[in-house]
Image 1: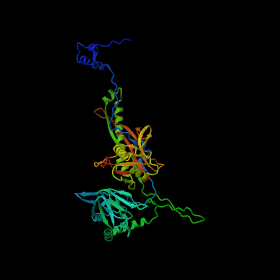
Image 2: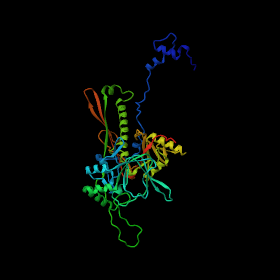
Image 3: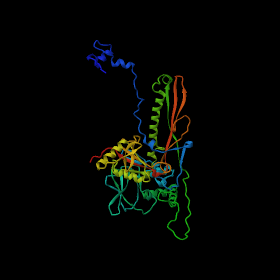
Image 4: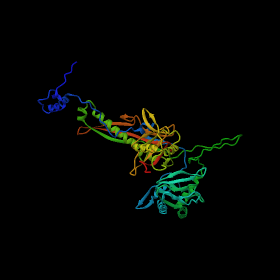
Length: 481
């Protein structure tokens, strides 16, 4: 077939002139005019806020009949294991009296006047990096509340070398047992790793207040009695057992006690009212259904909010429901391979995945490159995901980055059978559109606007404390050498 090539008059420029009214040199139809008869291929509406939502995809979802999930556990005597909050006026720092309930000794003590008197007796002290707050073997005579900074717990290793046993940070406390134990000594050295502001309470001062306050004295005596009950290393009611015996000894009798007030998780809700004008719904549905596209984007936004709530909600969010014993600090600042190994040690029974902000993952990659390590990726449903020790690290932009450029990494075990972290929802609800999500027609108003109530019901639960670990106060970005 012979193709006749147009002359110079049919170039794009002349075609454009022709579209604007024609040109003597134009010899064919211009593209702008031709488009009036052509069909445009369109994409569905795009939305920048849609993410992979790995947490929602990886959590096992449990049907929650009645909208409430109760977590029954063995009875535990470990009372008070929280983090203390402070107020500051200029350079002066004070502990909030009611926050003293977070100390095991004062959990359940409700005399606000006595708590205020006790809070006023704390003395503010400041320590420079490398300065000791307490030394190994010294008499333990002070309770320390860490208001700001990091403190290393340093002990002697088997062969005499110093070993970092742990890191304390903002809101942590140490030495609370000395308030009721006499002639105790420090089993480690407390050294400031950064500039530290601490509030201290001498044991003698606390004893004076006990002698002056009958209500506090009776509360302390009840606490001492509680400590004398048989407990295992996790603070749970002990199960008496016998092993390695021979002959016919009398076997111990025992029973397993339960918590009398187990925690209950109620399903939370994220809702919105989607409005579509009837004229739009009736006339502008080719090639795409307008109501369907409006609904699709609305549901995407609801699911994004759902994941955010499951991480950050103060009632059931994972960041706030991780046990304080499962929260660890970085050894330095940025997330190093050693830090992730320490996090693995907190969730050592079948850990399934890490969850971190993409910038935190990048910071971890920088630290690996710094020491010459190159972690491998793992395949997760066809996706190549970065991993550490074979455990995938999923990106999640819902993990907050503070103004001081710090964030956290979550590590969890999941599933009811594994006593892990689970997602909660209820299926079979009226007008269900997706599992746990309903779209309910609300009617048409006098302005001819159709309304749909879109609702998502969800929550999350941590079945036992060691199912979830958090690496806190991670510095994002490189540290200058």
